[in-house]
Length: 539
Image 1 (cartoon, one colour):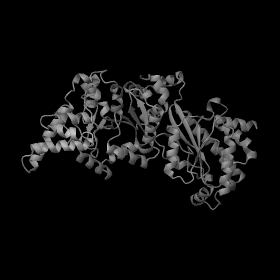
Image 2 (cartoon, helix red, strand yellow):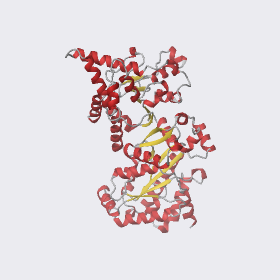
Image 3 (cartoon, rainbow, N blue to C red):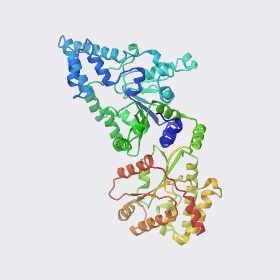
Image 4 (cartoon, rainbow, N blue to C red):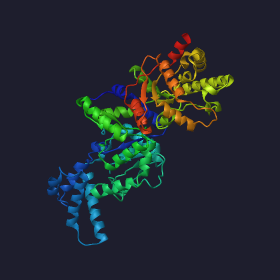
């Protein structure tokens, strides 16, 4: 049974607002596989192999039945081609090779398009693709692992009268990403090759379909041939639809991207007629595997649900806000990353630029921040305190103005207490409250989930000794320990627990992966941070 649009919003709100966030930033793309072409009666890989094997020209039924269960698809295709080649081979010449290859491509084309009819391109026939047409047209790059051009045909048919009269096609087809693109939007890239319905449209000079071509493609990806594709995956948030993640080159690129950018995640639709038929253990195994290996966030959806997802990604802001209110679904997710000086907050945040990140200071740093707080004069302390309070007002305003999406913030507005003696906290609370809220309830600190990075005090002190360019004594391990004790005291006023990550013996990338898991997979439980100021003021 399909979930309706409201149910999809409730279940995947965080994913939806993140994809919208990236779409609005011009950093969103689609990746399609065989599942997208099935409603057009285009065969998947197994079906295409069988069709080719049963043709009179190939006559490979015996090979198909003998090797079908024991050989990979690409190996089976290679065997069928070699069988066909042996029958057609007439002489040892380059011309003979080209003639055989041409005949083979013609067989593939005929069997690929055998059941296709242009009536299948009419509106409403495909269960969901019409919803994604504008996304393809407006994205800088769409990746299509299929040979067919049904996406291009749909875009061409859905042009406006004005576009028709102006001769605007609405897309550009490429299969060699090394070459320069003519368009900035609507580029459709076929990394496995291109075999259009009308041959006159021009096929690619290669098809990645057999064992040798797959091996060559994988080698090429390792040597940088597919650097454009890797660059696209590392700089944009993509939604994968109709794929089974079985393509070795795609898996290699996703894995490579996940290692290079451990905080950068994509969304993968695992097609399921009825997701309720999968057990919690089955879903969890798939989710965890895709998350850990390929930086993919898995969504279990059927055709109708994929359509709802596409609609929600593109819904007008006002309509989405209304849906969120009606269904009591949060549409903004705020995460504060905090910890002692030098614990790795800023470095961790730098890996999450596919989200809306807010650096420690909106303005250029005040030079006094380079000095340990304990070494400042009374006048300097006042100057720094006022400057910091003003920075938190600006940062809070920026977060408040983000209506939808995922926000990740360097430091909480409560962090200044860790640099202040506890007997001065009441004055600090008054200052922060007056500067951040401006005596207006609407300007209170934006609630959010707090991630506290807890590092080894000795290691942090050594790091700071190298980092701080000053003649003054840097923060000692005792200072770091005192900061963490103050964090514990500050956060004891919060209703919900602070999420703690012990960074001892963890690599930079391991810390980032842990933070990513909290942001994308774990339940979002925000805290009212401003209540801490209220309680300290009243104490």
